[in-house]
Length: 338
Image 1 (spheres, rainbow, N blue to C red):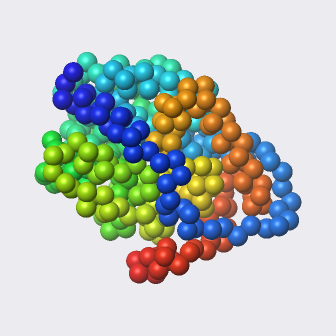
Image 2 (image 1 turned 30 degrees about the vertical axis):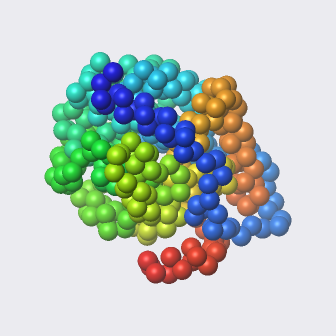
């Protein structure tokens, strides 16, 4: 097994080790005002939407997880089947490994083979050459491409990058890639200045991927002989990151610490067009069965439709207008950063 594949396997093991299904985060300090008389009914059609030109059953999706190893091949195969059966989008883990280890292609391609007509989103790091990125998009028949920004993870990673001059390559990627590109963090949150900068460079899609869920500094620190645990505190809470992005009026994806349908609903109320879920879905499948994850996602679809009915909404168009209020710790952060 190569060093890169070994790291992929270690990430999967440590993601399970550190998983806390009810881990407190910023969503807990965000509240929504509901009408006692909503005059609605539960209807799954209210949560249908489109993403990158294709209809999906719900505005939440399976966000980037894995690929590039034997175990991840099995995971992506099952996730592809589940995405196809539930008609939701699926983002794959970083495929940058294919530049050096093309033999790992099957560990990503199995998802497309299992889900030939659905939304598949590829994922690369910010220094992947445009020609390699184009090949990855083509081979995976990807509908969109995530480009992840992960400086904190790289510093915590024993074999990580130490040169973060990525902007010129991002410009080149934007010029060469023809499918929609999504700038994505990996659990430490996109800040407003970065969104402004990249918006001015012509990027239109952003996944804030805030703190509150999987902490890749924690995962890498477990692989590191040095104690870099202080990096684990550097994340920008998902609710804060989403509010910053919303002010920039960009196409927004909310992810980071999403644990249940109410968190999904709150992410949509924060201006997210879509909401991504990673480790909760992965551990639901790993600790149970693929069939259990399938039923879980189907339940989430019904429960999200129920939340729309509770809040008097007949579709997804006006969720950002629902009145929001916050507990004082989060409110203070919002005030300081406004």
